[in-house]
Length: 358
Image 1: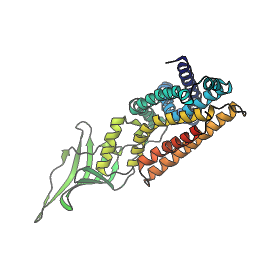
Image 2 (image 1 turned 30 degrees about the horizontal axis):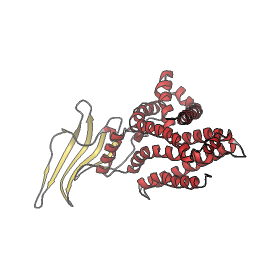
Image 3 (image 1 turned 135 degrees about the horizontal axis):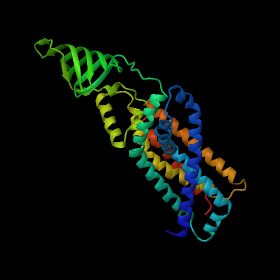
């Protein structure tokens, strides 16, 4: 690695961490102002506020806006060295613009790799602690209010609950139907289904079992039984930002579970999965665009280039949010919607690159 490469990578990364520190500090100050009343009202211990909440909130925000911060850092650093005619000197010495861009891409690859490692395995564990704190000291106590819940618990086996009380872990008017093809073969009904924490099983009360074959139908009334089925109290607990608490393998497993149950809300978890893969590429794309738009020495000064960088970053975020909203609505393919901003901005980057003077 040459001296020029070390110089560009070092200053690019230093600028990124400086920008990240400043922006996240502002975010934490705003967040504390909004939540301080909740902390005081619910008597949140100061050590939990600082350690469980803010110590885990900082990496969350650094990761969440990392493409934006990388872009701003790139524009800020590159526009400064362009104003000092350093880039002109590099080009005059015979170094191509692509060669100047290479150290930036190395730095962006490092940040992208760290980001992927964080969102895939590290941040979910921090998010679990932060979300638990928020549910305890910020959010109101959760009460499951769903009615007439239908869940697929196994192939050809469908469960139904009229209502569920998550405080007592008790479900009312439970049925479990076995349907093969278009034929109902068995229907189990119970007035109540109660979770037993020690046994990790459900107790079914006041049971009726209806067994049907092609020629006859049989009714039986067994005593209360304990049973294990693919249904758990956590299925009725608060799903507040639940997708943030899964590592990548856990997220894949949960998506498979939702698919097997035919549950609603699958798009949220698919979007989370795809975003974790697109974010490192977004860092590379925005870094390249940042270098391209700020490498020229402008008569309007560094401020104009930084303002232009902010504008492009804002457009990217707006585009991403719109695509995400469309994906959540299910009107287009989730994978396509999540990758669309990267594809469009890659095309914009190529167009901008072709306009550069050689």
